[in-house]
Image 1 (cartoon, protein in one colour):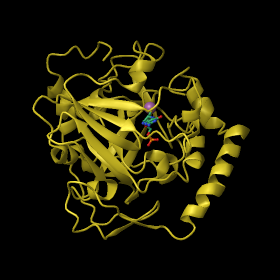
Image 2 (cartoon, helix red, strand yellow; image 1 turned 60 degrees about the horizontal axis):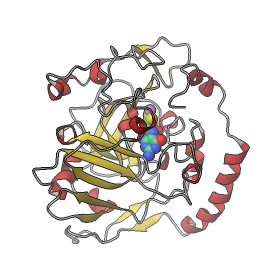
Image 3 (cartoon, helix red, strand yellow; image 1 turned 120 degrees about the vertical axis):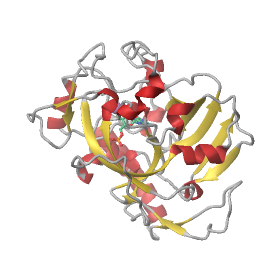
Image 4 (cartoon, helix red, strand yellow; image 1 turned 90 degrees about the horizontal axis):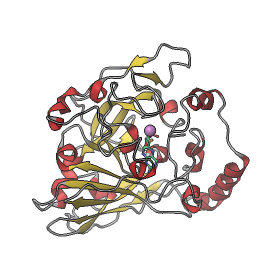
Length: 331
Ligand SMILES: Nc1nc2c(c(=O)[nH]1)N[C@H]1C(S)=C(S)[C@@H](COP(=O)(O)O)O[C@H]1N2
Ligand SMILES: [Mo]
């Protein structure tokens, strides 16, 4: 799991296990949710406050649907993307399970419509936006990004998303807003671990400094491999900030708040000595319990040579955001 012993990582990949308990929970959920989708996969949009409703009659298909009009991006890496199968079957999504292989099945019938995101805190006017209106704020862009988990593994993920800056502009924050906070949905009826104690504090929360949030590399992902985002990767909307460790990428976002002080973040609250607010990828700053110098690329096999981990995960263009900061402290 995030983050017990480093040698858990290879073991969990060798032996994909699914506990009997969780399998039963999943099967029970599948029967109930199956009825809801049996009538077809087309879902209607919902109206949303504060945005034009001229296009509100369009429809969006559920998981597996192609996203059209995707624009390529100069920010994409030309490294070989990790397979769709690996990206959607090896996951961290603690609301469903702390195992890497269980979330895919457990999240299968997670409901992503209707879905709204509230924009609040230090904004001119708090509002609620429908997910389908968010998807129309900016043309969908393909962003093929390296993804580096703090546990020491990585992938290359062809996200589809919109710049986070687009929704921040729609939120119209006050000049006093210096930080942006993200919150995952609370849905214990759908997320088995939200009914259990001792996993994490729910809801999962994350945050960025305003200039990090406005940086053109930072996106809200709505898809991958040209398809609507699979549930297990954080559908319908998840944060992607590619120069930071993966846990900053809050999944299934329902709230974005604007603040004048550093927001609490889930892993920092859990273990402040191990996970800072900034959590920029940094090969020179080891985790207290393991090295961060190298990473295992998922899909290459357990015995493939590891890749060197790059400062800022290779996204050096963000270095100026941290001028004057001691990057080797536990940020
Ligand atoms: N709500 C929520 N968001 C989360 C997590 C989580 O457990 N819950 N795990 C984080 C971690 S540790 C990682 S590495 C990435 C994994 O994203 P992926 O499953 O799409 O690869 O999601 C991040 N976002
Ligand atoms: Mo992670």
